Length: 517
Image (cartoon, rainbow, N blue to C red; front, side, top):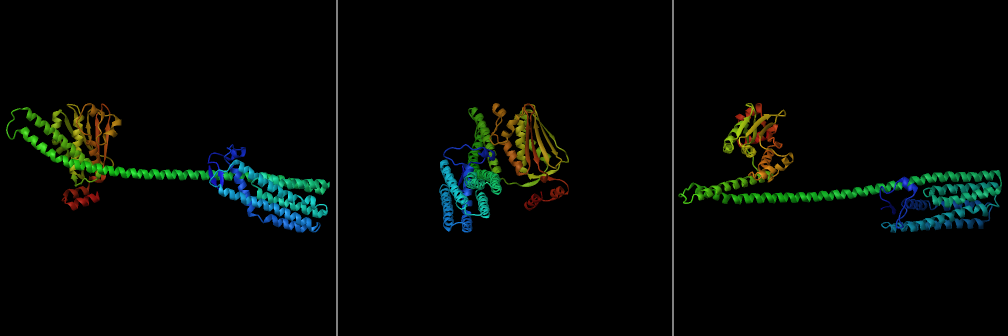
């Protein structure tokens, strides 16, 4: 329920103008929505013109002194003003009650009680105004009769203007006056008076039709106002919910940032703390495996030392990857931007992964145009990208497989470097998972392929630091294609490339190159 102007109306959508016209079924604990609004409007209109009817009564009483005793005129005036005073008192009491019950739900029975009292007060007012037709009629002339009829028709028009939005009061008030006029004129048995009676009835019917239209308009206005207010209330509620959700999301974001910072700090600290004992483990295991202080009496010790050294190397590589990923996520990885020839950089990395390729008799083929422009990048970061992608391709390619590295310049000026293997590939739904840290595909888990799932996330983070993008395409049985794309802003072509190639790469010049990239 929605309360407006001390009036209880149904929620938006609960009632339509058509439904209101056909009647609305409500419980005993509720008020009739739009009818109570109309009654309230009548009461307010009545109080706004509280002095109009007494002025009409005073003027009418003064005119009747020409043919009626002053005692009759005075008595009628007192009765008319008294009835008007009773109605004004009831109107004020009703508004006071509405103000007190503004936040409650008035009973349906209360509304009917007040409607009955207002209708009764209107009936008494109409009875007072109809009484001159019988009490002051006999001593008057025909012209004075016409004055009485015209005055009462004017009162009917005035009362309809005040009560036009509530039909029960119109019928109780103006209907009684019109009925009295018709009876009085009919009793005269004169063509003129019959015409006056017919005119009064015709005017009453016309006024009633107009009043009905006005009432329907007022009713629809209240219904639409209730719907608008309810919609506004819903919007306010939804706005509060949205603000609450936004505040909660902001708190969650802050908590996530704090958790991310704590995680990064923890990983960085643990990586640093693990490196010291790992270096000792690697050093001592290498000394033991090489028998630098004498030969072992039991050869198994040398094998164990090699296993310790390999395990320590793997763990150190994992720690370094975690530290790199942490720095990338925190944006604290330093970049030393210099021109890089992609072909030369890949040739250097070929030597680094040559041992792994020979273990599985795999071929590494480069397809790089001779005129491919240089790129302005951080050499160490790009080298790590090549190593991670080549190691991944070698890891998942079969024995005797082939790894193809292709580089090209796209139409938009970007340079794309693709690493294509002929391994088993992966389902498309696992591609997004493979980009996440510590995530491994089903094939890697099934075949127990070594790795912690950090290679691709590190590649993605490093290329993002350069403003580029990383693309991964794969299908089961068709291998995998990993593509690194350097943006056009980092491609050195034309006169700009010649200037940069000839310039010394001092820190200030590198900053200038980065700014103009």
